[in-house]
Amino acid sequence: MDHMEDHVDDGALDFRSGTPVRFAFTPDVEADTAPLWEKVKARITPLEWRAHAPLIAEINRLKREKDAVILAHNYMTPEIFHGVGDYVGDSLGLAREAQRSDAQVIVQAGVHFMAETSKVLCPDKRVLIPDLMAGCSLASSITAADVRMIKARYPGVPVVTYVNTTAEVKAETDICCTSANAVQVVEAAAAEWGSDRCILIPDEFLARNVARQTAVKIIAWSGRCEVHERFTAEDVRELRSAFPGAEILAHPECPAEVIEAADFAGSTAAMSAYVLRRNPAQVVMITECSMASNVQADAPGTHFIGPCNLCPHMKRISLENIYSALAEDRYEVTVDPEIALRARGAVQRMIDLPPPSEPARYDLVKARHHVDVELI
Ligand code: 13P
Ligand code: SF4
Image (cartoon, rainbow, N blue to C red; front, side, top):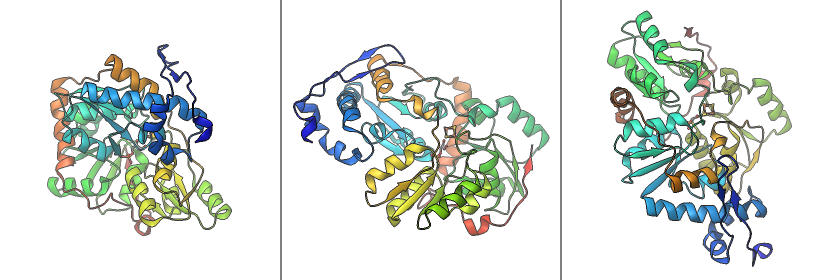
């Protein structure tokens, strides 16, 4: 990396908090982070790297000093995902890792509901989120009062809640799910409750996609992921005609027509596993933009084609505010102990189900049969 040798510059500045965060890109930092640079250089420019590398080195030092781990979601930018994430993965994987970790401090490089889930599962740990405004349109689509209303309307029907919800909402529900296990959870809940119906909230599109995979009748709420709802079947058709050899992968928070038109649908971890296992020459990932950048680092032989949409909430998390979270011990995520206890029951019931041998995929042959869901 000739152009980077002997170069010392200012490092990074946290514009959000106004705190200057400056570390030099010294020869030592350059040498220590060289293997990482090799991995991410297809997606990060040398100029960006000179700002990222000193922060990565400093964050990794602070983690050891503070007995902290960083749980990084698949939608984090590659310098976070590959540079400082101790555990990376989908919502289900991160929840499991939170529980397994011995560290005293968890820094959630993801959105607020993920940090709450970590706190609910690990009440004795200090859980930090680098930006308290990192929300989620699904989590804000439903309240605990809404769930109480739903339960009163459908007595005896099990309530399955997507983890993309607040702890208060989880506390009102029977069992949680993620996109990696939603079909399994719905079927387990229906069997345990002796019901032919199941309430699956709040993502309408996930509920419709699950309904096509199971004989259990699904009652849904009209929440949407603001990132995935924007993709259309027309987008998929246009991509197919422009890139006939490309394999098209989609997240189940997309509308059912998008899933029908795709080649594969699954959670973020399932999409990643699909690419790493099959090494396709060309891939389209119909999901958040950082997914492709992160998988690219481990799949150099695959060419990733757009489109993608940015999640504005995930993108609030940066190396700069992760550094500030560790250095200044902020922002702590707390959950009322009584709420946490009830929410933990719902999350733990999900975790206690036998883990799938690989992240569940959505069977697109079944998906081509239309199934009605009841929308509350
Ligand atoms: P995964 O559970 O697939 O990681 O998805 C979480 C999410 O927020 C997707 O938008
Ligand atoms: Fe929420 Fe969608 Fe962002 Fe995931 S991508 S955090 S579901 S808004």
